[in-house]
Length: 248
Image (cartoon, rainbow, N blue to C red):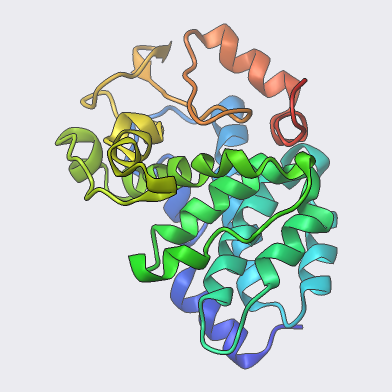
C-alpha cells in the first residue's frame, strides 16, 4: 500500500499513460496492433516509475515489478530505477537505487542505467554526483554508466523535441567521468536521445506510409529501425526480456 507522501509524489511527478502515447506526443501515427504494442514500452516505464515513487518499501516495488510480463519487465525496472534515484536524492534518504540494482534489478542493468538518466533529467545537476551508486561486480558493468547520459538525453528530447530535436541545441557541458565535451555528444542533441520522431524532424526512417519512426535500441545506447520488417522482428523478439541481459 502506498503512503500519503508516496501518493503525492506519484501525482506530482508521474506523467499519465496518455502523455506517453503516440497521440499524446503529437505523432501522426495510424493506430494499429503494432503501434499499440510499441506504446506499451513507455507506458510500462511510467508504471514502474509510479510503483517505485509511491511504494513504502523496496520489497513492495520489486513484488509489483515481478508481476509484469517478462517481455516488458526490464522497462518497468527502468522506471522504478528512475524513481529510486529521485527518492535517494531527497533529504534523509539513500541506498535504494544500489539495493534495487544489486538485487532483483540486476539482470536489467543496461535499462537501469538509462532509468538513472531519466532521473537526472528531473534533478538539478548538483545532485547528479550521487545518481549512479557504487556498484561492484563485472555483471553490473560499471563502465556502462554512459548509458545514464543517453537516458538523460532521451528524456529531454522526448519531452521537449522542439528544443533538442528541431533546434539541435547542445546541452551545457558536464564533467561526466571527466569528459565534459563527450557528455554533450552522448546526451544530445536530440538525435542521440533517439525518440520517436515526427516527420518534420530529422533523421527518421520510413516504417509505414511515409511515417518516420525512430526507436531506442534496447541493447545499447542508440539504435534505429530501418524498415517495417525490422520493427516486426523487434516486436516478435519481445523487447525487454532480450535486451535486459548482457550480450556476449
